[in-house]
Structure formats: C-alpha cells, structure tokens
Length: 318
Length: 322
Image (cartoon, rainbow over all chains, first blue to last red; front, side, top):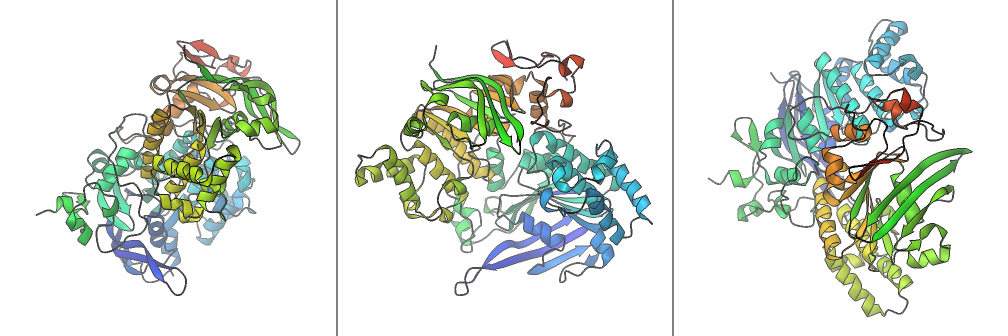
C-alpha cells in the first residue's frame, strides 16, 4: 500500500501582461507512488518544478488538476485540511533564517506548533521533549540555545532546529526542500545525518528535493528526475546513479563535478531553453541523441525494466 | 624553473566592524607559477574572497591590510597608488565575479558596457576595432552576437556568466581570478562553462586563481589547491595530493564529507562544531576546537606552515590520521 499516490498532477502559473497571457507549466502530468518509510528523491535543475511539487504536496499551493491521495483519502481539490492531516504533513525549507520568526526565541518557535497540535499535556512536558531532541541533535547544553533568537545561531544549527521543529509533531510525511543546499560542506553532513536518524526512528516518509545528484544517490531509496515539469525518469536510487537511461539524467551525471571519478562529458547543445515549445519532447532542444520523432511528440513514461521508468523515444523505438 | 607570477607573503587583512576587529586573513603566503591555476578552497568566512579582493585591491574601506606583501606580474600591488593601480587593473589582470547580474548595470546594454571597459584602457581605438574585438570575444565564450544588444536581465544565468568571462578577457590580461564563477549555475551549465574555461585558459596561456567552496569545481580546473580555514592557510599542495592524501585534519574532514555516487548508502561524515569567532585573537591552532585529534599542545601553540614532501601544512599532528 502506498502512503502517497499522485496521479497526473498539473500546476500551471499564468504569467505575462494582460494581453499576452501565457502559462508556465511548472508541473505537467506527474504521477508517482511513495511507499511508507522510504526517502523519495526529486532531482532537477532550477525551474524544473521540484519546489512546486513540494509546495503542492504539502498543501501550500493548490494544483491546477490531478489527484493526490494520502493514506487512502483524497487531498487534492482543497487547501483546507483537517488538523490531524495537517500535522501529519510537514515541510522543511531551504533557508532556515527565513522560516523562523525573527522576533521569537527558539523555545517559543518550537513550543507554539506543539501547543496548537496538542502534543503533550503541558509546557513543562513539551520543554522536556524539546530538550531531548536537541540533545540528540548535538546541542550542548541544550537549554542554552532555547533562549536565543534565530539570528544568533549559525545556518547549520538553525537548520537542525527546523528539522527538530518539524519532527516534534511526529509527521507521517515530511517534505525536505533543498534542506542543505545553502550550508557549508562540513556542516552539511551533520544536518543530513540528523534528518536520516530522526526519520528512521520515527518511520517518517520523506520527499527529498535536491539538485545534487550525488547527495540524492546517497540518501534516497527512489529517485525521480524532473525536467521542465515533466517526469523523465523514475527508478531506485541505485539504478539512477549506476545505469541512468534518459539522456538528461546521463548528461546530469556526466556534469556533476566530482573529485572521485572523472567522467566523460556528454555534449549538449549550447544554450538552454527555459520553456517547453511545441508538442515535442521537453529535452529535445538540448538532447544530443534526438531524432525526428522527438520533435513531433513528447514520449510517455514507460516502465522499461522492472522498477525503472523512462520517458524517451530511444527506448520505445518498436 | 618557471616564472613566479603571483607571490603573496605573510598577508594579514582585518576588517573593522562596530569597533571589533575581524581577522579575515591571517599570515597567508603562497606563490603561483606561470601557466598554473591555483584553487583557493574554504567555507564561508574562511577569507578566500577577501584574499582575492586584496590581490586586485578592491577591498571595502573598512578593511586594512595589516601586514604582508603581494607581488603580481612584477608590480608591488599593495604600495601602488590608486591611479597607477587603475591603469593596470583589468589590463594586466582581471576577475570574474560571482553574482554576474549584480556586476553589470541593469539599464545599459551589454555591448555598451563591454565597449566602455574597452575604451577606458584603449582610448585610441575606433568604434569598428572595438566591435571587432567584442565579436571575437563572444565567439570565444560561445555566445551569439545578438547579446551585445541585450540588457542583462534578458540573458540566462549561463549567458551572463559567459559575458563576465568575456569582460574579464577584454584587454588580454595575463592573470585572471575566478571568484565562485560557476557557483550560482545549474549543474549542466556549470559543467559546460568549466569546460570552456579550461580550453580558454589553455589557448590564451593564462595564469590565475580559482576561488570556490566546491572541491569538485576546483579539482576540475586547478593544478594546485590552497585550503583555507578561518583566515589561515592550513594546507597547500597539488590537486592530487590534497584530494588523495590530505594531511591536515580539516582537509581530511572536508574530503570525507563529500557524498559520492560510488559509495554505498551510509552516513556522511562531517566536521562537528562551527567556525571560531574571528574577532578574538587566537593563540592556538584555529582548527583545534573542531579537530578530532587535537591534544593539549594544539591549544597552546599556533602551528607554523611546514614543508613536507613538496607541500605545505599547518598542523602539529601531521601524519596522524583521524
């Protein structure tokens, strides 16, 4: 049984001045299943719709069309959730300095959501619980940090606290949107490790959004690759990293700077196209392997091997 | 023996902020030989950008060069007058900045801005000569000629970064500094620009520095790497030495905190702790509070930079592995 089922999800934003209205297809027909307890990775470059997906799934943005089923009940259609479902879906944002109220002390920022969701009976118990989490996260002594304001903490410390803030509510489903991308390398590991420890302990399911393929390969069970709002590949993390099929995933792999192994670079056409044009494959304008069929029609996402789906005519030639 | 193009000796740069003195760069020395690219690697607050800005003398007014000497292409950079400096900056050496959108004026066309920078150093050139040179530059960085007539906001991040590279190459400099030149870009664009920089560097026989927090980027572009931590040089060696056999515990931690495709899913190891307060004078190894192998000795003495097997390390415990 899947925890979250997404069917043909679309999110269009309208843009432009009144006369030349056009729509930006941030998500264009995305379908997938997330099994309970897994870490589901979403990979893509800026503008591919990965953040939009996180916002729609955490019900902060309404979808244009499509269906979202969470634990068997329908989520799509409205942003009004019952408080219990609201508690079960939490989100961690990229920039912790922008996701904390600058005028509240850390203690207040952590207590407030617990009060609203009736976690524990009184503030003393809640405080006890917060201190326990902080101690596990390496804050020594934990109570010294509770009286501080967000700006008095470093990025890594504050991001660890925002993970704690989300996890204190015991969510079933957690969206982590680029949660380490603005942190320094040496503190990144401690934040990722805290997230992994907590979600393993609480058996939380995670949607892990990142642009860093090597990090996703490290952390995730499944990876979905998005390009301009379309799913181009979906498989286990191991397969995506070891034998990517879609040309875009292969290009992405070949260009990820790594100190471990120098890879052969795949040449792509020079200038990136930022919006999809016409009815062809979204990646066709940059694809080094494209042929006539790619210009005509967007390939469907087809399961080519067990647990490995790809949207590319190269694999659908029959 | 190759010529030394850049020689930085015992450089210390401090900032004065709210009556506090921030020690951004402390006692940094290194040399760059002709034709080499040296990467300066460090996390935010390590002083790498301050170092770059000191070399081309673009420091803000609250910064003071406390001690040291910088010799670049034969010029004693720190003692030159502002007017003399302006004559050689961008002609002899130049820099590619990180935030390209902030570096250009939003209300002037790209072509005019490039032409202005050209005229400032070559007042005798005719319009045609300038346009010819600009077109030639655009070809070098793989851009179509139409971008000359565009405003900065009409171009994508990758195109803007190529414009910044063209701007830096305008007057045939011999020395160039890339300050986080590819940081804000998407993976594929970043990869393409790195490839382009590599071939440009080769064909124009440039020397320079690459400032970055990303070991991957630096390892693609540089022959040598200088690792900085809290304003100090902690290790300096060839790219291979630094990545394969880091000697300083900080470098070791940095290399190990990189996730890799090849590894099995397991815990990433990071470096616990935070950057020290740079406003306090330090009489110990700056890394000691975060160092897993620090002993009492490390909290008492400032380690000097020792030369070992052709590389330099500032650590009392060199050789001891974590």
